[in-house]
Image 1 (cartoon, helix red, strand yellow):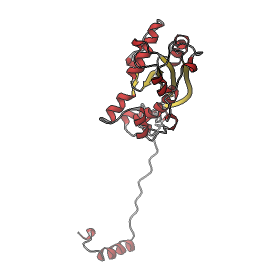
Image 2: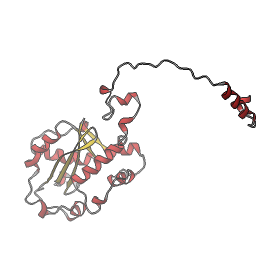
Image 3: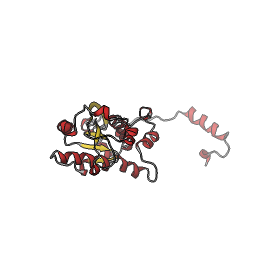
Image 4: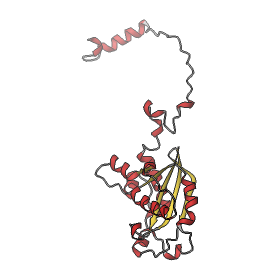
Length: 230
């Protein structure tokens, strides 16, 4: 099963007001586990990046002035994600920007139906508790030290991949003995389980010897209110 963890960094909060993507990072998962395949780009937003946005992700105008625009990398991006499920934290935000840029280039929008929003998963699993990426990393003991100064699209995708795995049941999820889920487990593949009939051993009896019975009786007599005497 192939899924794509995705994150973006932007110039602001609303593409309808001129904000744009400045970084995109994607990470491939196979059966919930990260592979070495990634897609990552800084993107020239063709506008200034406000200082308040730079304070979040650390991406300056100088860093992206020679980088490709979204339209210049969109073909490679779409090839990388294919038709697979996208794993996004607070998916509404990222999809708003992605679909705005895709529409500008004449491309079809990404449907909500192919997206898993880990923010929603976390809120369902831990109602009433903080469901930010930082909070979830701390909850699951995931190292956040690389995120101490700035956010980053590929870094956050790597962190989110670990969070997603934990939200789905952790690294031992495929070892569940529940037959309803075992057949779909990425770890326990019942298609390769040996179902050949097993040879049964003949039943054997192990009667106690007379001396063993007498020794047991003597021991019971020494016990106070022994159940065996009832």
